[in-house]
Length: 378
Image 1 (cartoon, rainbow, N blue to C red):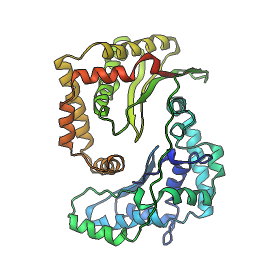
Image 2: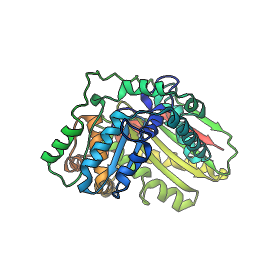
Image 3: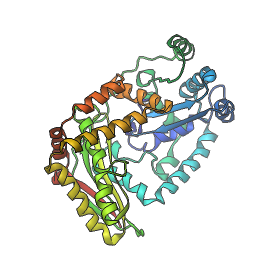
Image 4: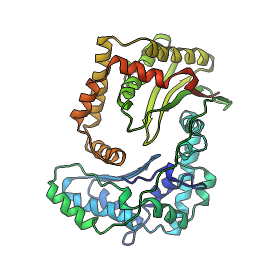
């Protein structure tokens, strides 16, 4: 996992981090695309990558007997990709097609648009995919310039999860990774300016109304983050018994898609409630969302409700740690953000320590009406 995401792009580079992620698989000093893709696939494994706002990950899942094959391949991709010009030009069309497909879905596009609203003028507000114009402008030297800033061991974490001894893993890492080194100082990321509250309505000519209400929230190292995770899950998490689902969708049948999200970044955070509904139900739906949030700001949770809320999020966290790939990616991200790995038991203890007053406090700190922005697509 590399501490290199879309927020690390300079002016005119929107979408470059994602473009690099795609291009990493297009050839190395000793492999062509075909050989990269077949190296893991032919033994029944999977190799993939993703780009986020603050990181890029190259990851693989495989039978343990092929561990060295995977480690060597990931090292080759991360450090020895050659970015052939012919392959770069082909990949532009693939990504532009991805952008067009994405833009056809207003329920997805609105999230990027809301990011732009809340982080206006900052790279965190830019689309990870970029635009057709920026993608077409990318040249090989742009890729090398970005990688020269971020693709160094100081910005990287190698994570592994599987039935292998620490001694064996260390030997494999020393064999395939230890000769990559640099003395690059980690550059500071650009400061995120204060958010300007806005309420924007755009006519998109869609059949359904799409609505997001949200605000800035706690960053990844804030002590209040965990309480806010519990609060967000209680309000509109993935479970069918969330307050938004029970008191709006089930009671009134207003919205099919209704959920809340919280994303903690290294120095800021973002909270959003999304609703997709019939245009005639939009105002009522918005009013009911604000009503449920206001209840959590005004009324302290009872003992039973608080216990249930904490048990539910503990279950979600435990289940997310049930798969090897999730554990591996979680460890890597934890090192990048906190320079440590928190044991599951310690996280669950911290959740147990959360009080009803903690939830009341974070609700009032983040959800004050003068801090909430909204974006509506009609």
